[in-house]
Image 1 (tube, one colour):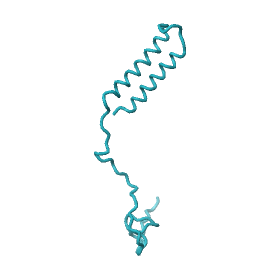
Image 2: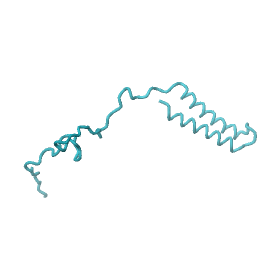
Image 3: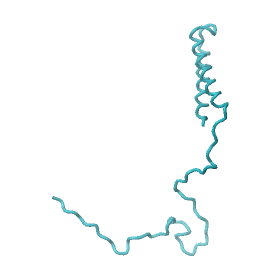
Image 4: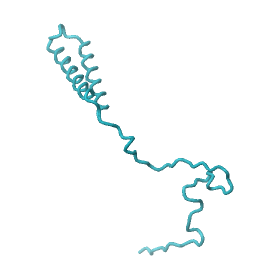
Amino acid sequence: MATKRSKRRQVGHGGRTTPKGATTGSAAARPGSSNARAEPSTRYTPPTAAAMKAPSRLWVPVFMFTMLGVGALLIILNYLGALGSVNNAWLVVGLACILVGIIAATQYR
């Protein structure tokens, strides 16, 4: 059976070697440096309430559903032959309308 190894403590090596928040090349690590400019933090900072975006205006969901509906309607009418002869151009226009509706959906808050 294996024996437990005890952790050895090294005397004099238990704390920080640089000041808290300092990097090796910063002014805080070099005493006597005249550069007092603070470096930006690399830690995550949550957004403030002022930076949060407002809800979308009414025209965004209306435009989104209109484009999705028009695109689906164009594709269905193309296959039924209600737009004249069956043409791939109507299919492409219908798919483009659906794509615009999906892009508008990404802007909805």
